[in-house]
Length: 355
Image 1 (spheres, rainbow, N blue to C red):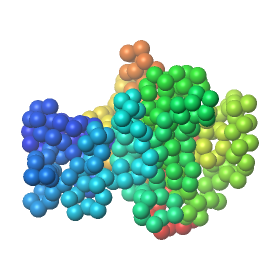
Image 2 (image 1 turned 60 degrees about the horizontal axis):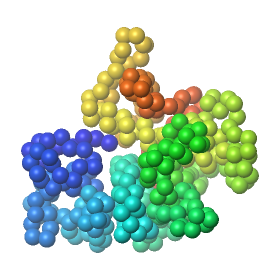
Image 3 (image 1 turned 120 degrees about the horizontal axis):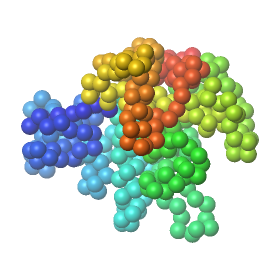
Image 4 (image 1 turned 45 degrees about the vertical axis):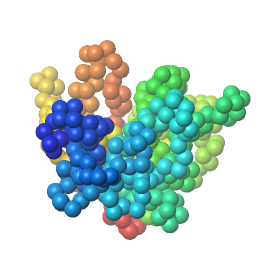
């Protein structure tokens, strides 16, 4: 993620902003330009100051009126929904104020995910595209009957389901503690589940299974049995030597999805660090980095890792100084870095290429 500036007054803006607090201009994100823009009304439409073309006009995503989106749609676009919201299939009953608030949290996390998807130029077919496996989201509440099965967050052939329970900070933190997880966030769920989707698109559909299996293991092993074994026995005691998380040990599909999520964590956070001009060179440690590059465009994964490790040492130390848990409570062993290298490779493999 990067920082933005108001085109009218120069105020620093953040990705979630909807109003410039300095000059009062409404704000909208232009996914076609990758810019947050101050906007001015032009009848029923809007002039985006970030777009230098005098003829360009925009409208807000239809979910803007529901306080669920701050992205914009070019006036000539076919859909009333923005590039992120076009992937929604089901949203909760917004007449329920609690559901509405949780849905807003879900949409905020989804927009950050879609920012990365767009920046990395990943395939993102919509339900109306004709693609047999479009990228689709269901945001579902548990049924009112407490004895009925609860909504499970997961992925199934392009459909990503996120439980509204995960959008409640207190409930999600309780689940994190109950499951003994070092990290559990809404954005993390999105990044993990979309990893399953891109296994389909970038590994299976590009016939790269052999190369993937050489790194992550045999994905043909029974998934149901793997789940049962994981919850019965837990992760192997030495899992940190080869996996980014204990959950990744369950099955090669989960290993891939967890590694994919961490790749997106790294790229997005490094871009934010670059936007702040962060450089790290502590006298007490033999590590240093100056994050002055676009992490979406680097050729070698080692460039990302060489910047990421010193940054995590710094931010974890800052969190500890505030009495908080580590911001990034993970260890990247050499085998995990190899897995991240595979993710980097397939992300930057041109569309249409097969293994």
